[in-house]
Length: 548
Image 1 (cartoon, one colour):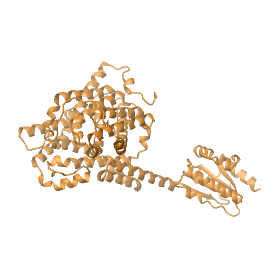
Image 2 (cartoon, rainbow, N blue to C red; image 1 turned 30 degrees about the vertical axis):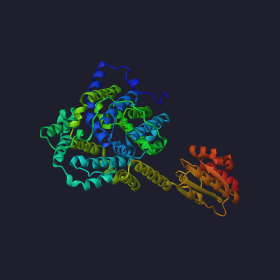
Image 3 (tube, rainbow, N blue to C red; image 1 turned 90 degrees about the vertical axis):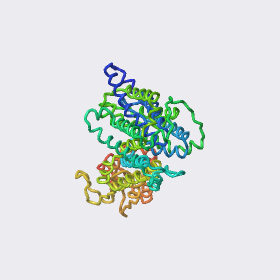
Image 4 (spheres, one colour; image 1 turned 135 degrees about the horizontal axis):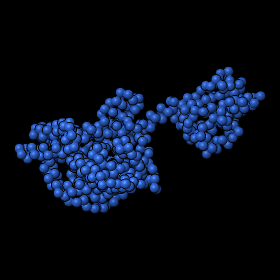
């Protein structure tokens, strides 16, 4: 258990200095300033009240920093969850979201305890790029309403992305030019501010956009919706609340909880990998998964939404001197102070500014350059997985997209492996691959198998037909790295055919994994342990003796 769960805080406090404490305090403060408008915006994009984003950054951010497997990872609400959370809230309400978040936390803990941290790497980049780009599109579509100041007709049901597109098209006549002006100014600030040297890097552009947008709307008394017009904001502390458990609801929410857990695992570990390269450290992936699980459970119990490692906030932490989990804990405590003191003023923030911030979040997470590069350079099968995952994320949801994407990726991978499995028959008088190998004697047939032997390729070697004068059949398995149960069954069929035809079956150079499978299936007993040889030379020598 020590290797599975060992928080980085334990290692970080060894030799901890006052100078490093100051750096962590400064980094935590700056990250909190960055996280404040983002947390509010992401909560709104997720279909919940603004303070729930702050609750998440406070509770989950503190717990994950305390228990996490990375020195500098900053956790909180992220754009990856916005679409799926909004769908859960629309269908099951906030109570359903709490249950789904807690379930996802439990799944993350199980993933960490079972040492699944390293298994995340088996999810292809085509799937992660596809659904990440898809999420970015759904966020943009979801914010068009507020950016243009549109008013949807009463009773409009706009939860899914395509429903939102349809609703925007029907309500375009309610366009508010003042909203577009404010949103445009905010978007311009978000783009230009980071280019203004040191001050642009030290002071978050989102904070400047919020301040400028709020002042403009207040001073000129513009007819633009603010957060306070649409939401009732609470500045109270997060309160513990245990949801009522309904097994039918738990069953219905399981796919969504699994998707949240998978997304949280992928994004948090990706954030850890990025930060490792920035500070020259190595995170503990299983500890991080357990911490993410505990953080999400606490977030759900205290009124928050799903949380995970946020790459942009983590990078900001590192760039501003954060080098221990103390910085992440400080970030959470600063947000707690802001919640109590300044949260009522968040009601003044114009909705077009929130939309502009989310536009930039979507652009930064879209990975459009990687998407285009994959479309230009990847094999056709990978492009199909990429585009299918992207389209399904936009048109349906993440649950469908990830499930179909993984199935397609597995099917294409199996086909690729099956296509790479080759069967070659050595003819009489023909030398093998190596000039040192002997020619095939009369009455001996050598079949060389190159590639994995598994269910998708078993038909290739299952149809071996021996000549009438064949007395000995040699299977050369030097280049067979793996063998599965279906292929083993096929080998038994070959052995039976040889036995019925009076042909002796020999095997040469069986590698470790195939040999272990054969022994478990007692195939070595059926063939005869004396008919296994370390190389083709020994097998052919023995075959020659049998022929004589």
